[in-house]
Length: 172
Image: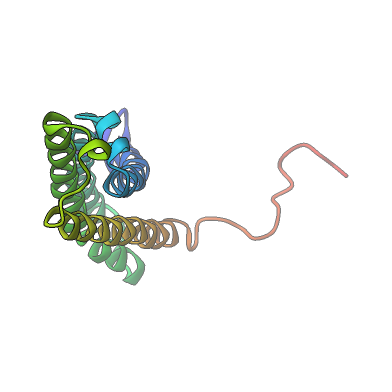
């Protein structure tokens, strides 16, 4: 995919990534910490993570096409290098979302957590999954921020004037 309605596809697809990765990260962290949230979200959590996972390589491939069609400089190369590192984070979000969904579903099928209590053997696993989910969620969100910041710098470093142009029709 290279162009959408005459615009580079990357410029449009990247907005899905910028919204979906932090949204998925937040949903995963909340569901991993509060199993009742995971039970309420149900299949939506892994589906959201799957859409997020699919959107990352789409935006990356469109970005590689765009990289070949713009002047190459250090900022563009840095942005491309950072962008290549997002897929493992998105994969981690997806795998953990599937696990959190599966665990919540299993808990629902076997009875309420509050009435049965969490077994001693399950508590360390839940804590580990919650911590890992938070680490991956924060890592993914920070990585999206870093990639977006580098992309904005690459796109806009010489693309605007710091002084007003005066072309807005206001003479005062």
